[in-house]
Length: 624
Image (cartoon, rainbow, N blue to C red; front, top):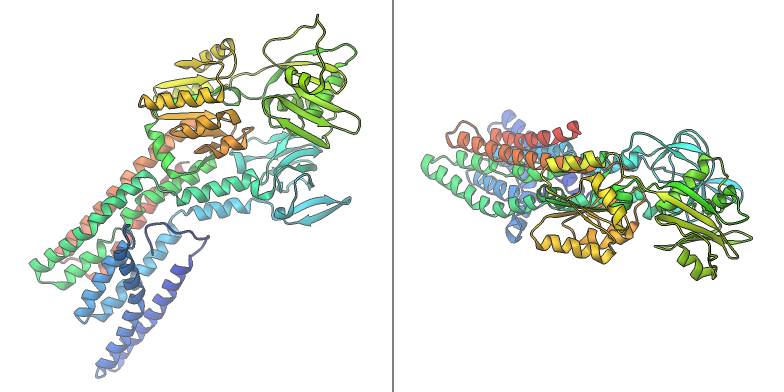
């Protein structure tokens, strides 16, 4: 088994290990046959030895091959096979083919134990995939047809009944229900889903029949992004793994030297063979990967998706956390404070057209309008055609009119409409609604900070962060108000995307380890430039998520201190595992040197180290 963990395999035993086990079973049968023949026909010693030698050669050749590959490889790979090859050759040189056969057989079954007992992220991925709908009920030509989710096209209508898993990312087109999003976001409380609300593949429809308009192909769903992140993270290496691998280059000659000294002092080949066997650094090599896998699985339970295990370790070094404001520090669920109507327009008429434009949009303003319209009982129509222009607004149309929801300057540019001279223009967060012939009115919003943010920031400070910064594109008055609530050490207002990037680079140049937390397209540059970029997936842009290192699928930012705590736990577990691995190997080497354990016992005892490491790492899963 290649303990470099550069493998990629599906759940269950990988093909190489399957071949090894089959080969070991074959060798075990021949070994048993040889020993039985030796007992029944003691006078035919050569025949018995030949049968046993066939068993030893059959099970040893793959070990020799991998050991040779390890010698020719620059990286510290197949360390176990190299040491075991020397032990087998030494046993064969002595004529002890029984030991030469038993050692690789025991190690093969030991590798099986490691493979099945490591809390493999493959099992986590398989468990996650089992949550996904296996079939989608699509509405075609007025009939419900069952198809594979991968066959769904954008803009198709998927029908989902109570108790079923939603098959695609989309926007509710018709119906109302409660949806359990815990499998994707980690949130315990179900959300209310109604026309205009976004839902995700892999979440569970609880109470009512809903029709969902597909907005993303199966390959682009949030569910598949989570699976892909887990798979990418499994293949990544943390800095401490690279350090261990660096010192493993020195470990091999050290073991050879110890075995040679033992042979020289004791004149006992058996003791030298035992040292070669028990010094295989399986437990040490597994020290970091098992802890990292446990941490990744634990994090995913809270809706924390880590793209690369390196960032899990970097969290422990972060001393500066920079927050974007809208949708990050604030709820991103704007509340309607005031509705200003143009002459001849009713309140319901304005809201109906605003919700028509906002339906399906991920912008906080749109989400607020849809939620408010639903709360007062307005029927929300889903537009046949819709286009969202970042930073400007949303355009939508039905059979009769084109409607615009967004900044007045954009609407003026698109339609040529203008305000009357005596019209009031409100300051703050607001949008205008218009059709192609006239202005309908203006809606003003307020964006409140997340209630848990202050507690989250206080906990982060206790965990070692000493500088909190708030960056916002809003005016100074709004930034100061939110920054005061947050307890920020520094507030920078009226920031453009380039300003955010420049600020991150400035702090890094000062020697700070910077974490940036954001959710919008305008945060993408800063997320990419920071040492650790955290994206808020709920309502966040795909570009921000793609440029982040860690993605939060939960709506609560109490996950931030959880990340720091998890990072610290992971480092502690890795250090404990290294201590267990090295301490156990040294103890066995001493016992082998004084002759208290034989090569066969050493091969069995050698497998206990990785088991202890795995069980220690598994504690993280129980604590989460």
